[in-house]
Amino acid sequence: MNDMICKFESEIMAIGVECKTNELLSSHSSFQIGGPAALTVHPRKKEEMIAVLNAVRRYDIKFVVITHDKHLRIIIY
View (cartoon, one colour):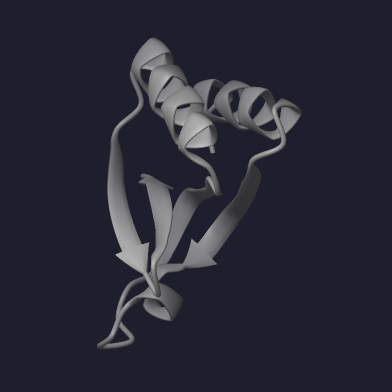
């Protein structure tokens, strides 16, 4: 994981949003496929989602938003 993603993770964790490194994406897929993501972010509230998306924009990080069982995940790759 590069330095920018580490700074991003620290900022997001400081506001109380759960982050996981090297989480297998297969656990979030109906077809059980997908390797490890550099970082997955698990916002629970609208305000957390907004804060995460603002930070992603600020750090210019590539990301994807997925849903699984009514939960949003932001995947950093």
